[in-house]
Image (cartoon, rainbow, N blue to C red):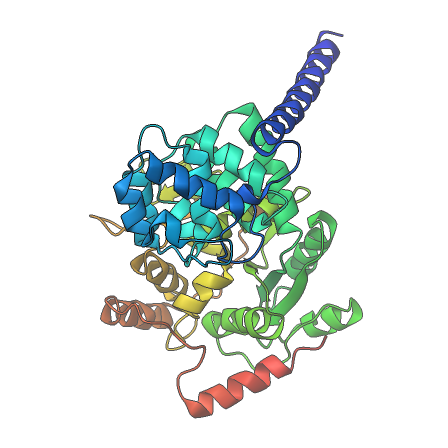
Length: 431
């Protein structure tokens, strides 16, 4: 009886919090926009100034804010509602830094986002504002740009992770944004049909919404291919060439053929164990560019976790990394490319790929020692036996050491001949 009463109270509190959040959102929208979005808070025509923005510029110059006038590059009387304005990232940062105490910061940031000539995420993730400002801006942009709204509320969540209003908004806005994305899930396997079957069945059971699925089989000689065909799972049918090659097959298919926005790559012994498991992985990939699996043996090891909570908005930073699950955004893939195809067999390939993300400025660190971003939400690992070969492992470690300073983008093949063979392997995928 006591337990039932406690659960009832918790449910009541949750409902009350959501209702309070809805009332707050409505109040903010009414207060700032007058019950419906005005021209001052939406992108009516890309880069064109609205009447409200013209009034804002006039107001700032009348206050004597000469730095504002200089930064935007025009005097207020030179603008009209057909004028176009493009704001660079450096200008955006300077506008915030040089804003006067009387400037409406919400209106200023809205003005910047409306005219940003750069990915707005770069600005949002690096500007120092209060969580309330990010929250209110997320509300204003919610019906205008789901992407911008997502980045704004995610930034608020990072600053205030336990705020009930921000947390509820974050969940709902993230759901809306993810629903617009094309998510790809690849599973790599070799001679472990039973593990593969459990993982694919778990993906189908626990993944919500639309997604692209592919199994990259590395030339198994058990009945893996037959099982995939019987269960109508898209899969490769090609010779064994090692785990790096096999991961690249799945990544290439999802990235180049299916054109997904976020790629999630699972090994066949790591599988979902709760509904909507992919949400945290998609969010983490979008926010940080790439994310790895925080295996329980890693986070339990003394000193292995440097910082973080394991949430998508504040992932663990770990001294150890495993390749059992990795997610990355399309943007990051375009900058980093694929696992280095010179690695053969087991070992080092995934670590080098992860470190390349970090060298290019994505989340993680190389100071004193490598630390890698990771979460473990929604997954469980069987830790099946690996196909480790000591000789291959030693060669791969030597190669990793040799190319440790290289950060350039990699293709999925070594040369022209290898490219032709690789593309044929991808074309073998039976959809």
